[in-house]
Amino acid sequence: MLTSMILKNFTVFPDVTFDFGNHLNVFVGENGSGKSHVLKAAYAAISVSARGEKESGAAAPTKAYLQGVLARKLNGVFKPDELGRLVRRQAGRNRCEVGLIFQKASSNIGFSFHTASKTEVTIDKTPLGWEKEIPVFLPTRELLTIYPGFVSLYETTDLPFEETWRDTCLLLGAPLAKGPRLKSIKDLLIPLENAMGGSVELESGRFYLKTDSGRMEVHLVAEGLRKLAMIARLIATGSLLDKGYLFWDEPEANLNPLNIKKVANTILQLSKSGIQVFISTHSLFLMRELFILQQTKDFKDIESRYFGLQIFEDGVNLKQGPSLDDIGNITSLEEELTQSNEYMELE
View 1 (cartoon, helix red, strand yellow):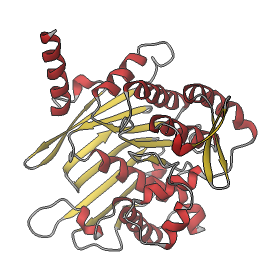
View 2 (view 1 turned 90 degrees about the horizontal axis):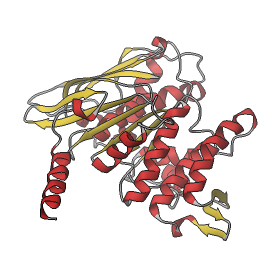
View 3 (view 1 turned 180 degrees about the vertical axis):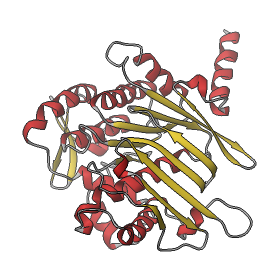
């Protein structure tokens, strides 16, 4: 469980500390306020640690291993021209620092780099052990339609897509989970399959939605249902189960209100199951739906944390708390509320 993250001079952030909740964490702000950057920074560090034991062959992390692989992951996830481009823009040479604090202190990690950095970071705090759960990152678009051949193409061609796409496609293609986890998987899948009207199948490298009336190629399915199908597949493979991490960038993107409601319910179902969820959004509709659902008996115990990111001349400022009332005025939300009031006055 990730309890906090410190960003100093990282992209748009001068010096901020995020204190996370155990269940649901919601990042709200204008375009360019760094919502996605927060998710990607946390994802990159956790991903390196979760894959470290297998890829390094070492029982415990070392500075020598982390300084190179973490730099490569940041480059792959953010796709800057050079690693140093992730340092906050200021006159002269500057340095950024990133620190992740976990419930299990042995997983804590800290690293830094400067504007001239290219292939290595400095490890300021070396974790004593590897993370056990591989995190999941969902970009703004669904990936089931591009899955066929994408991973092999990504590995052999210089594609401009972020490495999160490749990572998630690998998880989508994993075999279905078996054994004692099947009951937990079924409990999570049933509401999703009811919402989709069918189940997800992978055959000959392509995804399909199987319904009572037959089987449909996934690219012929509405995008909202494809996003739910992607979650369903990750649950079925065991990638989203028990205690893990989900980072979801603008889950409401390209969805109509009905599907946003389904996505909100899925987010809370995953939070309830033990997944620590992090989402970025500027959808008032999604946040209201989350709030409404959390007033019901099924989700009343879900702990939420909200993070308001506001752009100022000297960088992005952070306000945080357990409700939307704690994050200050976010322009996009204020505009939506103002328009609603103006519309009601015209009725």
